Amino acid sequence: MKKIPVLFRKKEECCGCTACYAACPVGAIAMTEDEEGFLYPEINTEKCICCKKCLRVCPMKVSEQSMNRTGKGSSYEV
Ligand code: SF4
Ligand code: SF4
Image (cartoon, rainbow, N blue to C red; front, top):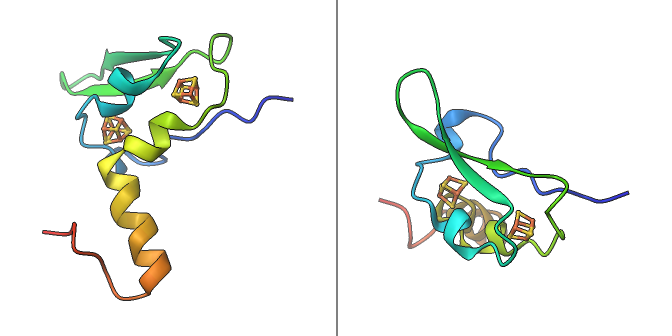
């Protein structure tokens, strides 16, 4: 079974920057508008090849990962 990445669990975990959308090599990500007009990425599970590029470019994940690594926050945080 394919392991489709989870780009965000809550809307606060995504700033709608479209980096994942731009990075996907197979065009599996679409930016869709929510009821308030904010754009959020949606992965087409049929197209996704599970390369995880989208997770690697996500600025929200980068700060999460460095926090986990160092245990004391990250230089990317504002
Ligand atoms: S894992 Fe790869 S193929 Fe799948 S949505 Fe992310 S960038 Fe696209
Ligand atoms: S790269 Fe991350 S923050 Fe940017 S749109 Fe994709 S999931 Fe949201």
